[in-house]
Length: 214
Image 1 (cartoon, rainbow, N blue to C red):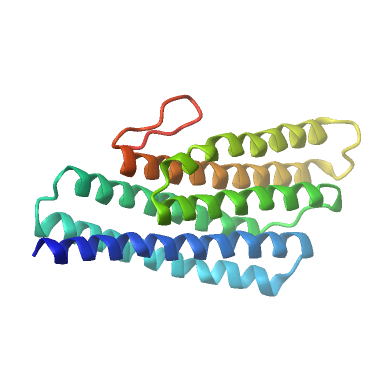
Image 2 (cartoon, rainbow, N blue to C red):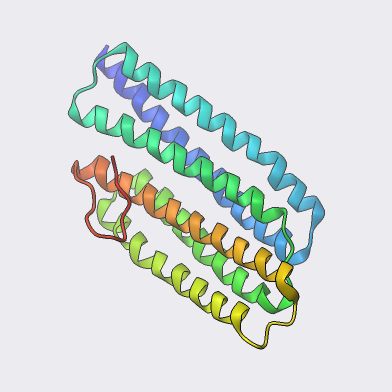
């Protein structure tokens, strides 16, 4: 009975990896749609968000079933709770990718968003790998990588508030909003990393760069 329970717990954790990969593709495609004003790709990203939502619901059902069938011991309970929280983080990342796909930006900031997308992709990939490997040590680097995204956001605000910005207020608002979307995607990737650390060590990573793992 316990072996079957562990198999189901491992399978549920594996579904998180599938969800992470869907989100990674969504962020890449959303940036492609954004930079290239590609309506077809944008529509695909928006439509495919339903797949992420469906996985979110499936994983939640699996976790609640695991909680209901047997009283999990400490390590098992920690994993189930962390998986539920990671599920939430990834679902929000998918939503943000869909938002990115809906907006267009001027050429002046295109390179900046390409770099933001590159950092986001790297962070999602690292979060996915640390979960697959149960590598708490590697997960710790996600917080420092997030600082690169924060620096790009500061550069972006300097550009939007500078005299060289010639695209008007509406475009500035769209650009600032998009920057916030990428920043939040990175924040959610850090949160996934914090949950991996919590699963492996039983302790939440400390410091202002880390969200709560509980």
